[in-house]
Length: 304
Image (cartoon, rainbow, N blue to C red; front, side, top):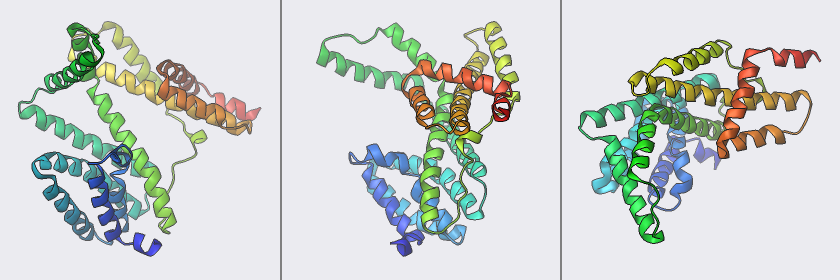
């Protein structure tokens, strides 16, 4: 099996299987790993042209099989091709995990932004399309339950916030897919004897202290910028991104505490799960990360 898995054609065939699985209930699982075959193809190919051949044939097969839905298939292929190929290329070069993930995240953000620009230039109103889709789902729910879920005013307010936070959603999607792909692909390459560097241990993660100043600047601007302005949309997205970033730092601090005290990882793992499932925990963890970034607490704990 390992001999077959070392050949790009194996991952080319797997790409087709994953593509067809998206038409079945298996999509709930496979949708998270659709970039992995592309990464493996590039990492195991000897040249870019060889990768292009092994990617192009299954891509063409998936496009032909999609029928009238081929534009959606083409969009998904492009979205996964660019970051997947870059991640695989940097694996092949033996680059650090930080370089690999930065390339993947940046590439996916760039492709998603290009998609948004193309949709806007085509005259499609994303907010109206989203509102129509949500209203259809709400009407189905109301017919089944006989109860109204929300008023028109509330729905418009939620959609307005959603559109304002669209850049944040793009970053989260890019980060999620790149992290999942890195974790899976690195382990697969390791089993095949291909070296792929891992990220530093979580307890060693540290944010630059300069982020504190950015956070303070954003907080000050939040008091003076008008809520209706486009600049406030930028501030709101930056503030939310910093909140998530400091929450990750807070989780890393809990891992550091468990590492220093030689305790179980139950506490930091629980903190990470609570951040995902219970939003108020995110704010608490971000405060922990903010303090850890601003003050040399780890140095003090290390001396003790």
